[in-house]
Image (cartoon, rainbow, N blue to C red; front, side, top):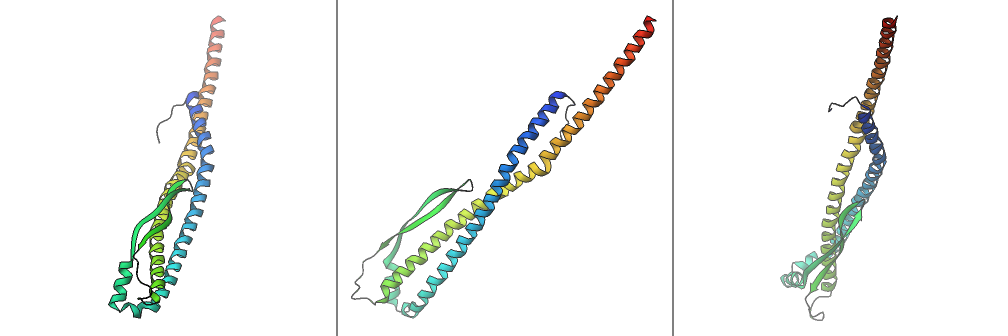
Length: 202
């Protein structure tokens, strides 16, 4: 702890600092609660995404035997290309995070009359798997950024609650005692000086 001056100026500085800490602490605590809530939502979105991915992959299982046909596998892999992944940003709990918007695909034309009927459904299922995978990456990044901000906010809350506020209160207490002692000593010196003056006059 830095050495403090036992003066009225220092007392006021400590009182002002205490007021500031007490004003900001509730805001930090509220932010912490908001971040905790948003992190829970992010975890739920991740779980929902994973469950949706499992459901789509189970659909694809029914076509696995067909994928053993080299022509079908080649057709499926060459028919779907990711052109771009669209994402934006949003303010969640006071943090700028990426938000998934969608995937733009380039689908190669193929002759539906010449190919097996399941190809169309398989293409759609694979597109959904890719979209869910890209969304998962972005939701994970949301979670990472929110978690990092929560750690920082929690550290600030702890700093205010456990260090800065108790430190200011203790400094104020110590300075008041010192100033009180100085006042008492000043009064005592004044009385002694007055008595000596009276004695000298007598």
